[in-house]
Image 1 (cartoon, one colour):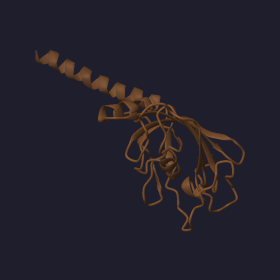
Image 2 (image 1 turned 45 degrees about the horizontal axis):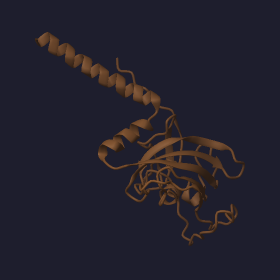
Image 3 (image 1 turned 135 degrees about the vertical axis):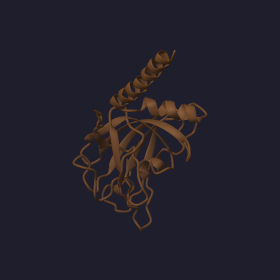
Length: 206
């Protein structure tokens, strides 16, 4: 009998989307959960970029705002196409309630995260910390996300850029480090079972 291990599905920023404004299950996960991310609906009106301190939750044209609390010291810089690993904590700006935190690895610009992340992490250096303030049109829109993020919610994320992969091997290692522990156990169990069966077969052949 085959046993299917179901993974708990929670929220993120982090985030995998389709261009059709639907919901999809991301391949990248935080250390404790798997995220379902909604493609944001971008307003047809021009977005207004304001200062971090002047961010308005009542302005319908408010754009993304961010503030670097620590500038990284390495040469690695996050840009579109780079495979990054980010530690984060997300909270509702309306009441400061934390709705998610963890670590996630993904490629910037691949619509794997909400638009506020794809845009807001650009330019960060490894080791740097940045606070993002994200309007709903760059996050979960008017629909929200489950019972945790209401429709029209403005979100704040405290982010730290942990690393930027430079090759395929580093990307796989980063994905593994951000993977749900129960999923890691499942893969190890499956791999171990395959190795055991192969060795057992070889012993019988010999």
